[in-house]
Amino acid sequence: MKLIINVAIYQIIWFICILGENRGAWFALPLLAMHLFITPVLKADLKMMALLLFTGLFIDGILHKIGFFSFNVAAVPIPFWLAIIWLGLAIMPHNSLAWLKHRLLLSAFFGALGGPLAYWAGIRMGAAFFNWPLIPSLIVLAIIWALLWPGIMYLAGIDPAARKLEHK
Image (cartoon, rainbow, N blue to C red):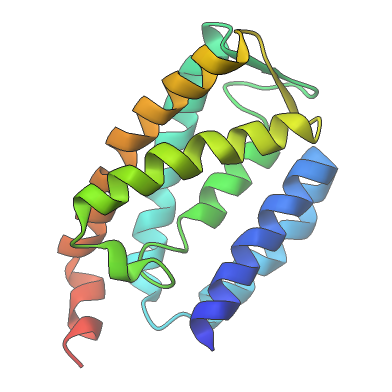
Protein backbone atom coordinates (compact mmCIF):
# COMPACT_ATOMS: atom_id res chain seq x y z
CA MET A 1 0.00 0.00 0.00
CA LYS A 2 2.87 2.40 0.81
CA LEU A 3 4.24 1.88 -2.70
CA ILE A 4 0.93 2.93 -4.25
CA ILE A 5 0.80 5.95 -1.93
CA ASN A 6 4.37 6.83 -2.98
CA VAL A 7 3.49 6.76 -6.68
CA ALA A 8 0.28 8.70 -6.05
CA ILE A 9 2.10 11.40 -4.08
CA TYR A 10 4.62 11.89 -6.89
CA GLN A 11 1.95 11.97 -9.59
CA ILE A 12 -0.16 14.47 -7.66
CA ILE A 13 2.92 16.65 -7.06
CA TRP A 14 3.72 16.52 -10.77
CA PHE A 15 0.19 17.50 -11.85
CA ILE A 16 -0.17 20.24 -9.22
CA CYS A 17 3.16 21.76 -10.24
CA ILE A 18 2.54 21.49 -13.98
CA LEU A 19 -0.98 22.90 -13.78
CA GLY A 20 -0.41 25.47 -11.04
CA GLU A 21 3.25 26.27 -11.68
CA ASN A 22 4.76 28.25 -8.76
CA ARG A 23 1.42 28.71 -6.98
CA GLY A 24 0.71 24.99 -7.32
CA ALA A 25 4.15 24.09 -6.00
CA TRP A 26 3.20 25.52 -2.60
CA PHE A 27 0.30 23.06 -2.48
CA ALA A 28 2.68 20.22 -3.35
CA LEU A 29 4.98 20.85 -0.38
CA PRO A 30 2.58 19.29 2.18
CA LEU A 31 2.55 16.13 0.06
CA LEU A 32 6.33 15.94 0.28
CA ALA A 33 6.06 16.43 4.04
CA MET A 34 3.46 13.66 4.22
CA HIS A 35 5.81 11.30 2.40
CA LEU A 36 8.63 12.17 4.79
CA PHE A 37 6.34 11.42 7.70
CA ILE A 38 5.45 7.92 6.45
CA THR A 39 8.65 6.78 4.73
CA PRO A 40 10.60 3.94 6.37
CA VAL A 41 13.83 5.34 4.83
CA LEU A 42 13.73 8.98 5.90
CA LYS A 43 17.49 9.56 5.92
CA ALA A 44 17.95 7.95 2.50
CA ASP A 45 15.01 9.91 1.04
CA LEU A 46 16.38 13.20 2.40
CA LYS A 47 19.79 12.50 0.86
CA MET A 48 18.13 11.61 -2.46
CA MET A 49 16.07 14.81 -2.31
CA ALA A 50 19.23 16.89 -1.86
CA LEU A 51 20.97 15.03 -4.68
CA LEU A 52 18.10 15.34 -7.14
CA LEU A 53 17.41 18.97 -6.28
CA PHE A 54 21.05 19.78 -7.09
CA THR A 55 20.87 17.60 -10.21
CA GLY A 56 17.68 19.29 -11.40
CA LEU A 57 19.04 22.76 -10.79
CA PHE A 58 22.18 21.82 -12.72
CA ILE A 59 20.71 19.89 -15.67
CA ASP A 60 17.52 21.87 -16.23
CA GLY A 61 19.37 25.07 -15.38
CA ILE A 62 21.87 24.41 -18.17
CA LEU A 63 19.12 23.40 -20.60
CA HIS A 64 17.25 26.59 -19.78
CA LYS A 65 20.40 28.74 -20.06
CA ILE A 66 21.26 27.37 -23.53
CA GLY A 67 17.72 28.04 -24.72
CA PHE A 68 16.60 24.42 -24.92
CA PHE A 69 13.33 25.30 -23.23
CA SER A 70 11.68 28.28 -21.57
CA PHE A 71 9.09 28.73 -18.85
CA ASN A 72 6.03 30.87 -18.20
CA VAL A 73 7.45 32.09 -14.89
CA ALA A 74 10.78 33.54 -13.81
CA ALA A 75 13.45 30.88 -13.66
CA VAL A 76 16.87 31.25 -12.05
CA PRO A 77 18.11 28.67 -12.85
CA ILE A 78 14.75 26.84 -12.94
CA PRO A 79 11.28 27.73 -11.69
CA PHE A 80 10.26 26.84 -8.15
CA TRP A 81 7.62 24.42 -9.45
CA LEU A 82 10.22 22.44 -11.40
CA ALA A 83 12.47 22.22 -8.34
CA ILE A 84 9.51 20.76 -6.42
CA ILE A 85 8.98 18.17 -9.16
CA TRP A 86 12.63 17.13 -8.79
CA LEU A 87 12.09 16.79 -5.03
CA GLY A 88 8.99 14.71 -5.72
CA LEU A 89 10.91 12.46 -8.07
CA ALA A 90 13.47 11.91 -5.34
CA ILE A 91 10.96 10.13 -3.09
CA MET A 92 10.68 7.25 -5.54
CA PRO A 93 14.10 5.49 -5.81
CA HIS A 94 14.01 4.10 -2.27
CA ASN A 95 10.30 3.36 -2.33
CA SER A 96 8.13 2.53 -5.35
CA LEU A 97 11.12 2.25 -7.70
CA ALA A 98 13.42 0.38 -5.31
CA TRP A 99 13.10 -2.73 -7.50
CA LEU A 100 15.15 -0.87 -10.17
CA LYS A 101 18.17 -0.29 -7.92
CA HIS A 102 20.19 -3.17 -9.30
CA ARG A 103 18.72 -3.19 -12.82
CA LEU A 104 20.76 -0.47 -14.45
CA LEU A 105 20.00 -1.34 -18.08
CA LEU A 106 16.30 -1.36 -17.33
CA SER A 107 16.77 1.94 -15.48
CA ALA A 108 18.41 3.38 -18.59
CA PHE A 109 15.49 2.21 -20.71
CA PHE A 110 12.90 3.70 -18.35
CA GLY A 111 14.94 6.90 -18.06
CA ALA A 112 15.19 7.24 -21.83
CA LEU A 113 11.45 6.73 -22.13
CA GLY A 114 10.01 8.36 -19.01
CA GLY A 115 12.20 11.45 -18.83
CA PRO A 116 11.32 12.84 -22.25
CA LEU A 117 7.66 11.84 -21.89
CA ALA A 118 7.37 13.75 -18.61
CA TYR A 119 8.88 16.89 -20.15
CA TRP A 120 6.78 16.59 -23.27
CA ALA A 121 3.60 16.13 -21.23
CA GLY A 122 4.45 19.21 -19.17
CA ILE A 123 5.07 21.18 -22.33
CA ARG A 124 1.82 19.96 -23.90
CA MET A 125 0.03 21.12 -20.75
CA GLY A 126 1.57 24.59 -21.14
CA ALA A 127 4.04 24.72 -18.25
CA ALA A 128 7.07 25.23 -20.51
CA PHE A 129 8.05 25.41 -24.17
CA PHE A 130 10.67 23.63 -26.24
CA ASN A 131 12.69 26.17 -28.19
CA TRP A 132 14.20 23.41 -30.31
CA PRO A 133 12.22 21.21 -32.69
CA LEU A 134 10.28 18.44 -30.99
CA ILE A 135 12.15 15.33 -32.19
CA PRO A 136 15.67 16.65 -31.46
CA SER A 137 14.42 17.87 -28.06
CA LEU A 138 13.06 14.44 -27.17
CA ILE A 139 16.27 12.76 -28.36
CA VAL A 140 18.44 15.05 -26.22
CA LEU A 141 16.23 14.36 -23.20
CA ALA A 142 16.29 10.60 -23.90
CA ILE A 143 20.10 10.62 -23.90
CA ILE A 144 20.29 12.69 -20.72
CA TRP A 145 17.80 10.50 -18.87
CA ALA A 146 19.26 7.22 -20.19
CA LEU A 147 22.51 8.25 -18.49
CA LEU A 148 21.06 10.02 -15.46
CA TRP A 149 18.49 7.53 -14.20
CA PRO A 150 20.79 4.48 -13.92
CA GLY A 151 23.25 6.69 -12.04
CA ILE A 152 20.54 7.76 -9.62
CA MET A 153 19.38 4.17 -9.14
CA TYR A 154 22.97 2.99 -8.65
CA LEU A 155 23.49 5.58 -5.91
CA ALA A 156 20.19 4.57 -4.34
CA GLY A 157 21.37 0.95 -4.35
CA ILE A 158 24.58 1.68 -2.46
CA ASP A 159 23.06 4.06 0.11
CA PRO A 160 23.65 2.45 3.52
CA ALA A 161 20.64 4.31 4.99
CA ALA A 162 18.33 2.39 2.63
CA ARG A 163 20.27 -0.88 2.46
CA LYS A 164 19.67 -1.78 6.09
CA LEU A 165 15.92 -1.75 5.41
CA GLU A 166 16.39 -4.07 2.39
CA HIS A 167 17.91 -6.73 4.66
CA LYS A 168 14.95 -6.83 7.06
